[in-house]
Image (tube, rainbow, N blue to C red; front, side, top):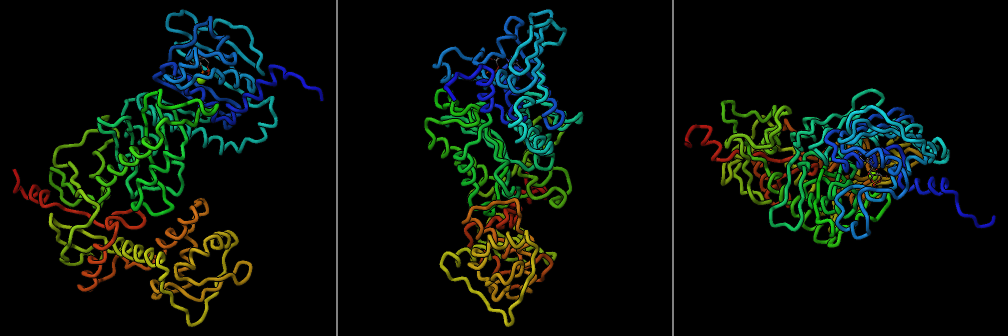
Length: 574
Ligand code: ADP
Ligand code: MG
């Protein structure tokens, strides 16, 4: 074939592929345009997974009727003039490509009215061909409709996933933008049903509540940068007791732009080190603000990646901020008594309740309540020396420390002790295992077989001896001494049932993951009576742990009732 210059239409469709990969990418570009237009309300509607219809309406500045046909030209933008502007860019868009790209692979309709225009204007683009601009009566702002996405690019159309998957991607995307812009109202209507609606009151916790629900919002910890820091971080992070099996809920915005950056993710994951079970990931929503000249946003057409001038500094500051907030909040939560009456409401409110601000969905304030509700946290990661006072409900140990009373969850505490002992033994290659008198065979489903095979090496390193014994059959000949008191078949079955087909732990995480599950099986249960000596031993062992305050699954091992709080409650203090 001779060399030919591509027709503008074909060139445009090829280029569109970089920007518009799927319905969610269209939604992203349109939302970003609305934000750039200063909208305070953005309404998104989709039908048929975004294939049939994507509509984004806003109450922003609007497009003057004289410019509307320019808006869909490639490289037409109102946001930048020279390449130098790129280094001081404050808008989300700048490439002038989105509308042109969308217009070349779908039927696009734009209607818009500026505030100083009496009538709005409307235009239609189909397959990259723009029809003439017509006047139209419309409210101030812009409405963009995209119908029949990829109707003229069958290759792309074919690669779209089910409606359900595309819908999920769109919902995730809208959620993220809603979280990054709590001061804007976001409404997402999917096939006529409202999926997301935020209030736009500027309250991040309230927005988190609209997206993730009240319970998660209540638990999230707020973080913010100290004044002297060279750049700003703000947002919310999950307490160690709240985690996910994948990294999908790590959300970062850099100067208001949603980005996916492995460096930022790993900085945050490291900040949780020792607080989360390996293979579990936190849920964070963090806004990073950097002077625009210190970040290159023009790395990728979808603008989902950025490059920082001082990458290392940013990561380390981020890590420090997150770590500091966690250490401040995660160690044994101290119970702050409600100022009016009822002591011991911990059961109904949950252990993290006093950690987060006393948030009610109707209140737009994130302020803490009265002084009595101020959380008080022991400063360090170490555990105070405790004197055992006894066992309570066959479930908790009661102990006295330098600053008050401690309630220790015996199961969680024992899990922590066993887990650290096991990991230490693995590192030293000193795991003790016990051979079974008679080998046990175990039959699994094919999915379980795959999961077990993948983890077999790590499991065997932890004191098991399990080998394949047929297509779906395994033979157990030894178990860790830790599990010698439980039925081996039962233990391994429980372990396999716990495997999550969705999680893809890194190789070195598998071990800790399995170890944590083994320890869960091996630990004393709630409801088990412990002798005085056993109680004492458990406290001593816990004191020796590196991370005594949480179990390997991240739940707290202890609750602290401070002397101050007790005195206040008994009316001994002012
Ligand atoms: P970019 O955002 O990179 O400038 P786009 O193709 O996304 O490129 O948009 C082209 C232009 O159309 C924008 O620069 C802006 O002037 C105008 N525009 C697009 N969407 C809106 C909107 N919702 N409100 C106001 N103006 C808009
Ligand atoms: Mg844009």
